[in-house]
Image 1: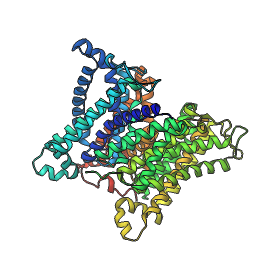
Image 2: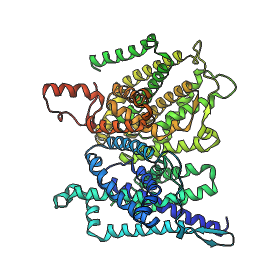
Image 3: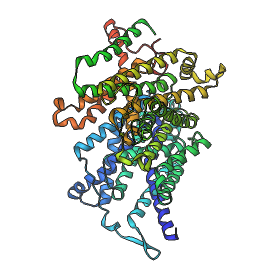
Image 4: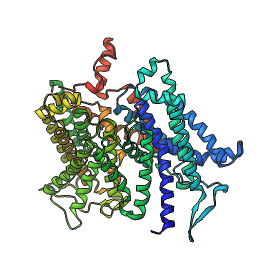
Length: 293
Length: 334
């Protein structure tokens, strides 16, 4: 493998890892703070991707503005949907055991997939890369790297930075961290935990949907796209340590590299490598790389 | 087991045995065979979830491995004997369960759920991506296995054989749960810490339960492969693992009858939502109805269908619906 190819694979790995992180962050937060296993999280990613496909023309004709405007509108919509979902479905799950959470969110996956099929249909769709990002930069003599993938990485990096800022530097972040370690105590200190949960859930939904939206031009949108992401995000969350944002970031990047380089170096075994890595890491540290907190 | 429970099971199995006399046609018999096979899968999961308290989200892997083992070992030259093919399929599924259990039982709670799911996905990708499993299209079973005078090409023979397997598995599990081993598993579910305190090394017990459960799921998979004459990666997919969990929870955890009732209810529900007669062209969106039903079931019947009789009874006598033990600590039908 010569250097330009190596560099391209590294960039791809980072970009994929960061995308995984956006989805996994919501998953790990919703678990860490509310104690809910959300199987439907992959569906949120799917909903985001379909929003990028379906909203684009609508946004262009009503508000005007291109891809970036679609992202903004989609994110706002996602926050609203997430807020309502938490209110209608998830708020009933906090006191239930894990098994029932698994069951209800499994039911939600079926519902989301069918609604998608009813509204948009079952065809595979491509989403066009916006014009101003359609170029690519040369790497070496023959290779190029598309601008859009750099844009995806940049968006993810900004979000990662924003998340860490909110988490470690703001009052809201402080409340979220406190809420994840002791629900009752936070409540008795006068913090509206119900509202806090709703915000965290809506944010988790929006992050997954946003990941789906920015990924849509690269991966195209297709039925069942949420499921593969869900499973790999489970792996990320487990390896990183459930509830740990830092762990999710490290694990997501690790998975990005393993998956990308696995596909190049060992194409036959690529699908299995990620799970093998998980097995090895769990043998070494049964509770993930980073303790939650 | 109480007298009513014994009566229920005798009636249940007798009804299934006598069903072919009604002559409901090939489609109904095929569906019933499928349900019986899924009931075996549900029983295998019940041993883990309902008895031992281990929520395994990868049961389909053992089911699928049993099915693939049956097809791959049987070969293309001629019919294999059931006498070695069935035990071999069960053993291979159990061996994978032993491997997965040895690793995943180091974790607990949510980690366990996710890790079993991930290991099932690993098996899924092995059959999906490698030449071993024939890719997305799956592989055909060229010859159904032979066993003495039995001809498994006849749907009725296969149905009765599957039913026999279900009854055998049920009796085996009923005996197992009443043994010292079964009591230890219940103890682990209720309070593992205390079990350790009383001197049980719990890990081997859990691993044994996991392996047995994998073997039973492998048996179900074997029967499924023989029934369909065809296997594909979806048999290992996490949708089936989820469906198996739905079955046992729908039926009611903590009792073997719950797992079987759940398998029946789930499959019949699925048939109902799939039927063109009821839903017309909307029938192809049957997932929607199924999903909504599951959500409603979780919201309204947290302890499953077996809870219905007592729920109605309490409604009639006016007793509080909220009294009674919580899900995790219910002792089951003893």
